[in-house]
Image (cartoon, rainbow, N blue to C red; front, top):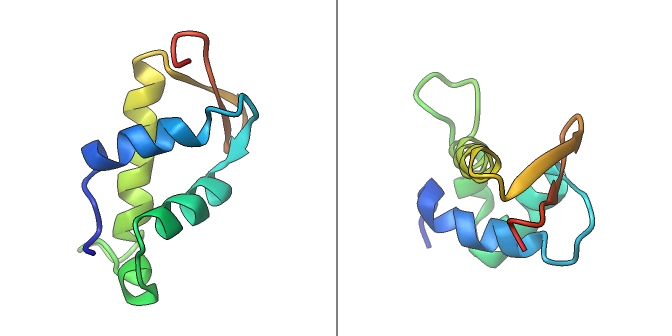
Length: 87
C-alpha cells in the first residue's frame, strides 16, 4: 500500500482515541503505520525539503484538522486526547 493522504488518515486517527486516553504523536505514528501496512521504505520517504517524512507530515495534517474541528485537543506537548465532540 502507498502512503495514504491526510484525509484517509483522519478517521483511523480519530478511532485511535476511542479509548478516551491521551496518546503521544509517536504512539499514533506506530499504530497508523501498522494499520496501513506501511513498509520501512515508505515510512522513511522524505518530503522534497528532506526535513520530514511524508507519513509524519500527513498524520500531522490530519491531527491538525481534527483539532481545529474540535474533535481532538492537545493535553500536553505532543500528546492528544479526544473531546466530547469527537466521541
